[in-house]
Length: 157
View 1 (cartoon, one colour):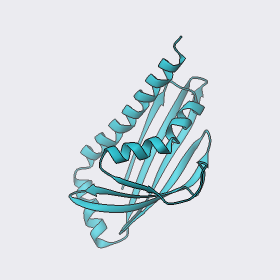
View 2 (cartoon, helix red, strand yellow; view 1 turned 180 degrees about the vertical axis):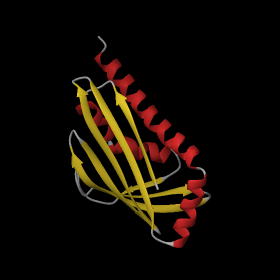
View 3 (spheres, one colour; view 1 turned 60 degrees about the vertical axis):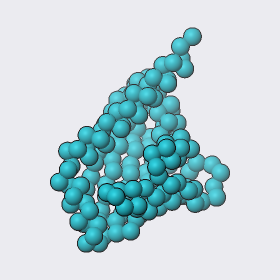
View 4 (cartoon, helix red, strand yellow; view 1 turned 90 degrees about the horizontal axis):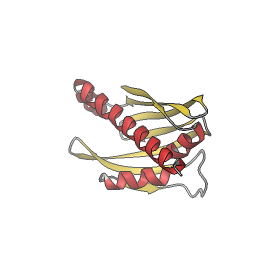
């Protein structure tokens, strides 16, 4: 199952990449939403090999996944590999500079079931695909709008 969306952001690619690679902010956001987040790797700097262990509720049951940063290419994007019980996935964030002050953010999430139980879980997601797609696109749009607002207010005199 694949979800993807693109959003144009009124900010330079370096600013957008800084926001999508602000892993501490994403950790805090996940904690506020009820997930348990633990950084697994000892690396101090952002880069390939960063790993997190996450636990979060999905359809009434706590699920555990391990997310590892596979690709870290400033300012063009990053990719995380996601592994859970019964499924694997990939989260890809790509950035394309449209101009000096405008960037296209492409977000793609792909989840592949590995077991029958995971296939059944993803089948229920497929049945509600439109709802999940709207939520996915809405979160990316909100992220882009918040980033634009922060960028514009930081440039204001």
